[in-house]
Amino acid sequence: MKQTLVAGLDLGSTKTCAVIAEAIGDERSLRAKILGVGLARTTGLRRGVVRDIEETTRSIVSALHDAERMAGVKVPAVYCGVAAENVRTQLTNGLVSVAGDEIKAQDLKRVHEVALSVSLGDEHELLIPIPQEYTVDKQGGINDPIGMTGMRLEVEMRLVAVHSQAAQNLRKSVERAGYRVAELVLEPLAAAHAVLTEEERELGCAVVELGGGSTTVAVFHDDKLRHLSSDRCAGSYVTSDLVHGLSVTQSDAERLKERWGVAYTPLVGPDEMVELPGTPGQGPRQAKRELIAHIIHQRMDEIFGRVLDEVEQAGYGGRLAAGVILTGGGAHMTGVVELGREVFAMPVRKGVPERSIMGLVDSVQAPRYAVPVGLALYGVRSRVESQMLGDTAVKKVLGPVKRWLQEFF
Image (tube, rainbow, N blue to C red; front, top):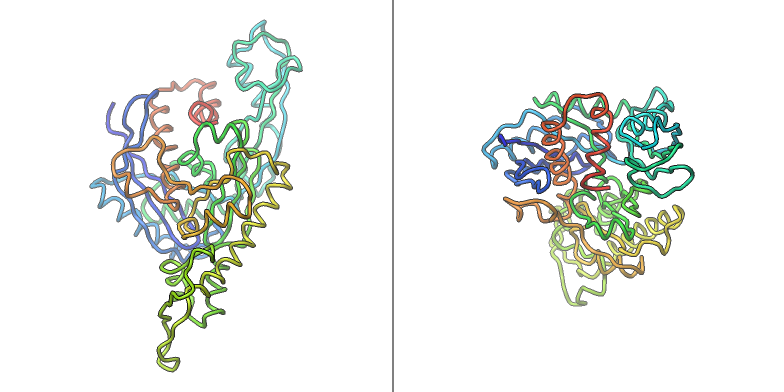
């Protein structure tokens, strides 16, 4: 197989991350070889929405150029993540009569077309359709009906739609940086693709992305995405609390959080002291690390409490046997797992990319790389399958759904 290069681009509210990978192996044992990683500060986005195209373009150029220098290659296109704040989901159903005695790909194509025929409105465009389950002659809970005998085929489909203006601004920012958008991919799906095991998806779990501008909750159960939500109470609130509580600047508060931040106060000794930055008028200052931890602990406790409320309101309280997986920059902080276990009363772990990757693995083994690595994994499979699939109408319709079903859902 000729060299197949892909790039995943995660545009966050505070950081832009790019990962370049190469497809290794065949369709059955496909892996992403990590070649390069780039990280840049973001100032042009807020809660996943482009507010300043020039600043956003600058961060894209910086992150991708760093990744290209590390990899020693150039990439023409990127798989770009779409934040959950910019999408909405809705359930729709399709029903068709089976053409013959046995359900074939053409029947699946027709029932998908019926389910996809609903209007998303002028302000949204379809990002990805995710079949929840099929029903054959009123027998439900079927994942793949092809080859089954029946006269009536139904599908329940979850449509994920992105706000058109937000999508256009993302594409425009990437194009101004000199790249092409190969595809827009929902970030929680990308992150889950990188960090979840098959058992976790089957038993039920929540992937919680602790970002700077938002906290995203994606609930998976029986191998399907069942619920998606976004909350603006996030890492920026923690930083703001430190600004007011310690009388420091925004940038100093961010550095204090990254270097000395602890999300669970019992982990900090009462005698630990931290030098505080300040102005000449303030003079030398110190603060107990316990105070910094207390400020962070209180806000993170609120964030986790809101996540738990969201899971319970979605109907999955007590049903997530595999617990909570934390991703995003906020998951790097010491004590988030301990606090999460206390609040959620279920298993909690950090989501570190490990599935189907090789190469510079140590460069991406951190929760903040879950999305870009997942985007690269998606891009690897997408590119390889597009080379292997024909151009028939059926394969064009089923291709995007099949990619996620075969390896993930």
